[in-house]
Length: 354
Image 1 (cartoon, rainbow, N blue to C red):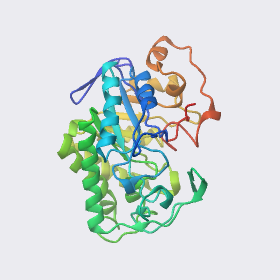
Image 2: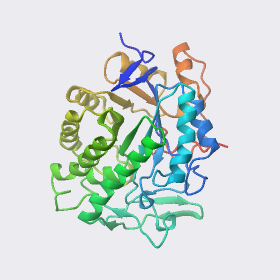
Image 3: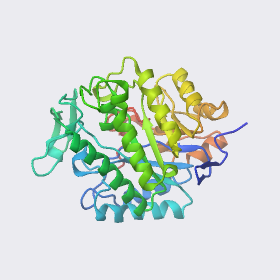
């Protein structure tokens, strides 16, 4: 029987175990030009015993920034700063992928320079507010991307992926989940387009497929992953009938030979459907009410997934793989330290460290 503590070959990247650090936005890019700092080096190095570390969301372009103090991978100073992180993780024996996330309509003009406003698939504002240094503000109606700008955005993802490899990352994960730009193309209530990027299942999955293919062509499919969240309902996305969309998407991704597909679980039934139609490595963020615990390891043992992510428990226990293998003990996560939601990718905010 395969267990979470067995090694796995991630399309050529050797992982020591099947326990992954979930991607969690930290809003601590206090270095020059939204770059990581020494605390970022420490944070990931502390958790390098994970089979795979997936970073906080990293914007591929200036206009892709969705929250304050989040890092980018679109300038040389950001590349150089991330190199300090990857060097330290590798020295500790770890493997690390950079998660690339364009916020799309999730953002605010106050985060952007030169009078820029957030861009989106369609001019549909997200409900709710974004937290800024001066306090929360309502999301604004995004400016709809033109066809040329969509192609330019694909190129931004490609450039950021190339920068990630220059910075020493083992690969990249495209954030196609949780209500951000790639997901905004997938969800019918945020994609009202009638051109080739909307109007039908084939149109709505097109951007996700194009970005994935382009990044895979640039850095290699084995170093490319993508994260999806069928019908999770975050940030105003509505997907009342998700299976046709995501089945079609997974079928398009299947022949690419990606490093992995990361699924935020809505139902175990659909996770098992994905398992049947996707032959590559499947990373699962298990659906829970209080954060993934040791009981989730069974999804490796029963073959539902190949890797399992942990968020909240990994924050409180930087040496989590060893504790899981020993059956504990575990430090208890303190929800009062969390900035805005669940650690498992449903909101993508972890604790802000003191």
